[in-house]
Image 1: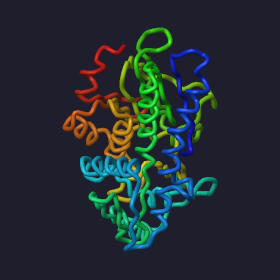
Image 2: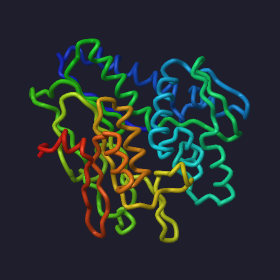
Image 3: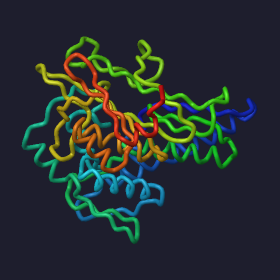
Length: 323
């Protein structure tokens, strides 16, 4: 999945290798099916098909795709698992790793936008039909959360009920921490607007550079927290900043002031997808959407030289006394 993972389990030291094997088995299964970095994954095989061809997906990949399609409908297209070709065109996908990014021509964007949503799901047999050449699936904005859920459920099934699972910054907790207390999960404080600083994009891995500042620490027993941010992955050209968050509805990087969106949910897959949708929607539209749908979300937006925090009603109900 192009990122790191971390798992903490409250267990006997002798269980370490058994736990490691269980965790890696679940993660490898998701990676083999849904990775856009592997040519043999189900997603990659579908993306190589031509218009008019279809692929029958495995039960697990279909479940993720079905969930992603549900969020697509709930968000009126702000979240879209077919946005991958646009992400690639702006230099943020797997094909663009290591290459010098450039803004695609308007004619190319128009062509790619025709392929957004150009697939048909056949629910009776788990088949997906490619309607337009160039249409492609990318589950990156939900697969990490799904993998976390599967690892957490597998640990619970083996009676490791007290654990924390993290993949690429998305987290799910169960039970209590090694101290016997609730797990304490931090939301990172975004740095000053990257376009106004000399820091450049921040590394997407633990242990690199200075420790991030913390905005808020949330006590969580059982649940997931996913954060999408607009300050780690971007590039600049001629004074213009291009974010990795691509709006499927316009085909272009978002330009609003939202720095990060954090979502708490019982499902890490949904928290992951909802956080991505909120990053597309922006602070005002995103907050309205979160409140309308009962989503527990914390939004941090750039306001001049400072950050403004806004939270949904569901977030305040859940974490109103978190500090």
